Image (cartoon, rainbow over all chains, first blue to last red):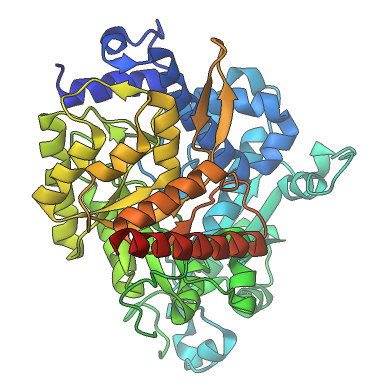
Amino acid sequence: MPMLLEVQRAIGRFVLDRDPSAKGGDLAGMVKPFHRLAVYRNNTFVLLTESLRGIFPVVNRLVDARFFDYAAHEFIGTQPPVGPCLFEYGGAFPAFLAGFEPCRELTYLPDVARFEWALHECAHAPEASVVDAATVRRVPPEDYPNLVFRLNPACRMFASIYPIDTIWRANQAEGDVGKVNLDEGPARLLVRRDGFAVGFDRLTPGEFDLLAALAVGQTLEQACATALAASPVDLGGALARFLANGFLADAGPGKSGYPS
Amino acid sequence: MTPHGTLPADRAGIGLRAPHYRDVIDFRPNVGWFEVHTENYLGGGAWPSFLDAVRKEYAVAFHCVGLSLGSASPPDSVLLGRIKTLADRLEPAIVSEHLSWSIVDGAYLNDLLPLPYTPESLANFSRNVDAIQATLKRPLLIENPSVYVALSGEMTEPEFLSELVRATGCGILLDVNNLHVCAHNIGIDPLSYLNALPRGSVGEIHVAGHKRQPESDGGSILIDDHGSPVPDPVWDLYAAAIRRFGRVPTLIERDNDIPALPVLVAEAARADVVAANAEEFRHADAA
């Protein structure tokens, strides 16, 4: 009688399709009927593939379901989940697609996948205490330069050289997608959850730079300098927009510089 | 939060599923309780406040799929910690897991894989149940799985479960659909199986459906797809289980191809009727 761990390793190789002979080696003697072990392999791949398809519906539509099945199979076999919370599985799929030779010509595909993962992550992100304009108005003006924020944890910043938001929108409706002009230019986006709903907005290059600087913990003064060094930006207008739309959250006790 | 220390035994519950979240809050369906698949609710999003709202109105049970108690390694302590945090928040009346395993060498295989019923496997499973029960400070219920293959071992499944109950103080979640599926797939007698489990050990029953898949030899295999209505043979087995174990909290289980809420509420009501009739037989048998 083989040890439990040996049995589980052999079944694991078979289920993940890593058993080149697909005969299960020593398993054949102790698993009856052996051919039905394939049911477990099928269940594992089908359920994980459907979970990924649910997270990456636009990728699925762009490559078609059969190609998606194929890509997902390769991904699952080489990078299976490490835990049972399937909403946490798939963060490595965009990078996998970027290196997946058969879809190499769809140069924008990995960015579409990254964007869908950002939407998905926001949907499962925790609630945070959002900083609004009224909170900031309670700060003495001389302290403004030292204000520190963090990005609302239910927000993700997203940038791509492709117009990912246009591609995504075009693939929401039923029927013919029509043509998306990839020369439309880059997308700088802010993805955000509000209740159960996840949406996104375009940011100007200046807004994007300012928000990125604030998100990494620069003070308001430093962040403004960072943004201005890159491009002209209406700093007051940008900050007002961030505060009005809940992009910024409290940096934590003793860090923010404004009264709580 | 209203006190819901126990699940009602006379009114079946249903699973709490994402497509129904608005309906559950808005219409408060007439079911006994809700089952929560813990691994779906360990993130953030708007789900924590949804769960709180449901818990205000209903008792809940936790059904875990990912602790992989049969693996030849201890349970994931981080996952267990997350489940404990959710349990402290929602105070479930029952926490259950499966007589199976899913994790080997750090890979999660996303199915409930079969165990060899050997002394080594029993000692390993008991150790893992002890660890979970010590952390959650409550007994677990362990569910009999659907299997498609039999692994050689020295014990039958009810012997293994009975020993597990004796060794750890856990209870059994009897899934009568899984029992029916196993009876077909590996040729066990379901009524002997029921009689081999100790009276008083079954703390909950799952009632569900399955699909039949033809095989190349002209036979068929039953697949526990968690996505089909409850067929008559499973209702019959449910009645047989009630006659042996009495009325215990019962769940209509449907995880895939989830129908509209009224369909599940109707199946739960049917379970109540089947159980009430079976219980009358039970009293008649005893008289």
